[in-house]
Image 1 (cartoon, rainbow, N blue to C red):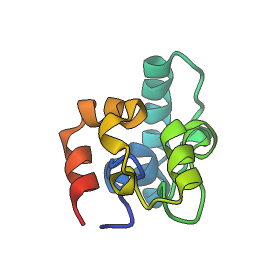
Image 2: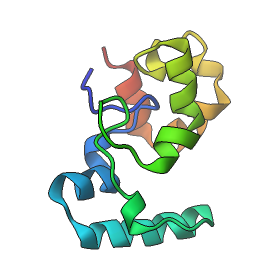
Image 3: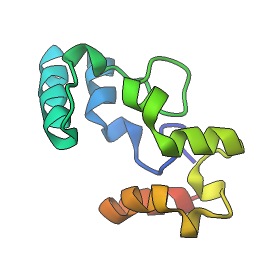
Image 4: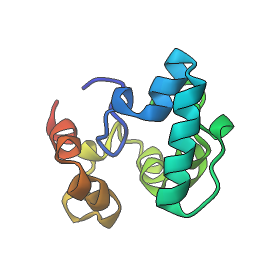
Length: 111
């Protein structure tokens, strides 16, 4: 499995926070902060949009590093991704991601 697949199965290389970080793209940071603020009904500033990948060493967005229940659970269980968890099929946390992104489930089932 690619190291840039997040614990939930999303592809970090397609994430605007990752892309903005890798390209040092301030305009994309601003656009992403605005969108994520609206979607989550919270204030997210452009300086919060920095991430080098969910499962890699390096900077993460505040949400991913501190608030993502999926990431915290996977790290606690010491699994590479939710795809390695025996309880994935019944997991309400990852079900939200899988339900909104068919590729996430494919990524989690890929070995």
